[in-house]
Structure formats: structure tokens, C-alpha cells
Amino acid sequence: MDTTALDDPVGGSLHGNHAHLARRIDRAATYLPDVTTFAAVDPGDGREWDDLARLLGPGASADLFSCPAPPPPHWPEFFRLEGRQLILPGALAATPTAADVVELGAADVAEMLDLVERTRPGPFWPRTHELGPYLGIRDAEGLLVAMAGVRLRPPGWSEISAVCTAPEARGRGYAAQLIGGLVDRITALGDRPFLHVAAANTAAIGLYERLGFRTRTPVTFRGFHVPGEVVSNSAMRVGGVHDGDRV
Image (cartoon, rainbow, N blue to C red; front, side, top):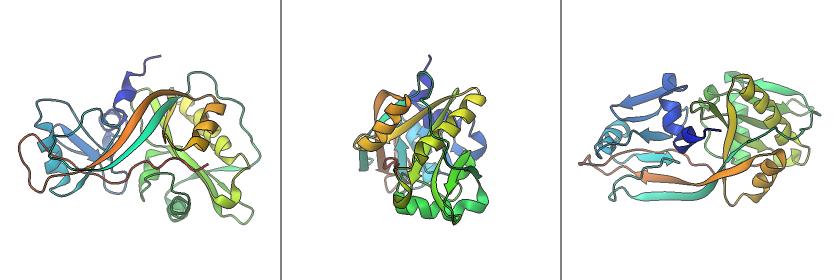
């Protein structure tokens, strides 16, 4: 199984499946506003950071997620979180099918944002669902109580993200059911599923491992401030960072 594309999943997505959702200057790229804040650079002689600085603007935040290349030393780091990248090397374990799963889209954004605010699974913006698909489960009153979706899509892979369940609906197997639905859709596309999670979120890691996911590598989620003015061999921007799925 070739996992090379997972070394830089943001860059691979921006240059491939998500090129239509990207904005770029030379060797730097990031997503369109309100889609997500992740940025990436093509490694070179250091001037790629100048490109990113021009793209994001002086004083902005650079959300480098799991970017393998750190920016120059005078880029102040303001966020760091240790995490894991997991892949599904075999078949997914059996998942429950007790609830009806619905496709989520633009009409559901307000509810999706409300659920994210209550559960804080990680960064999610008004247009994040366009990376999708996103799936959800509603309670008897029609309220959205669980969701999960596809975010990054480097070549051959699709990332499961924003797995979250409202506190009052936990313990019913909704997260596992939604992951099962996404794995079916991902494999139908010819991709393989992967995901990221905060290292401290042992509950989510336990769920993923029971479903058959295994840790591929540790990752560090990082945010940096773009220097106040563009200088040689530096630049970039940021937005939100993964907090860990709430299942």
C-alpha cells in the first residue's frame, strides 16, 4: 500500500482533487475563504515562504496542519498540537445501522455549525461541506445530532473528518455508523480512508482502532503568524486547527 501521498495531504489535495477550491501564488496555496484554512508550499529554495506570505498577507495566521516543511525561524509559532494519522489497512469492522443517515449540504450549514460549536471536533467553516460528502443523523424531532464527512483528498485517499455527536446522543453508535457510510462512499470512488486525531483524544482513538484503523505516523498540527512584512525566505497564514473528534 503506497502511503506517500499522506506525507503532505494538504498539498496533495490543493494540487489535485481540490484545485477548484484553491487559491495560489507561485509555490504557495491555500483554500478559498470559508472552505478551510489549511495552507501548503512546494519545497524549494526558501522563497516559497515569500509566496505564502504574499498569498496570506502580513500578520495573518498560517495553518500548516501537517505540512512537513517548517517555515523560517522568524515566523512565530502560536499553536502546536500533537496528533496521529490513521489509515484503514483492511476491512472496516461491522458498524451499526440503527439510525437513518442523511446527506448534508448547503441547506444544513447552520445546523452543522451549531453542532460543531457544541462538540468542537476541529475546524469547520461555512463552506467546509463542499469538500464532502458529509453525512448526518437526526433525532426524532429532526435535530441534527451527529455528523461526519470527507475533508482532505490527496491522490488515492480521502480523509474522514468532523466526526461528532451531540452530548445527549452519545453512546448510540452514531459515529461508527457514519464512519461506515463514509468508508463505503470512499471505497466506491476508488480511494482509501484515512483520518487525523489529537493524540490526547483517547476515546476517539479507541473507536477508530475498534473499527480497524491503525496509526500510520504521529503528526504535529501547527500554526504560525506571518511576519509583519514580507522578508526574504519567509511567509504564510492560518485558520483553525484540529482539536480531535468528539464521538
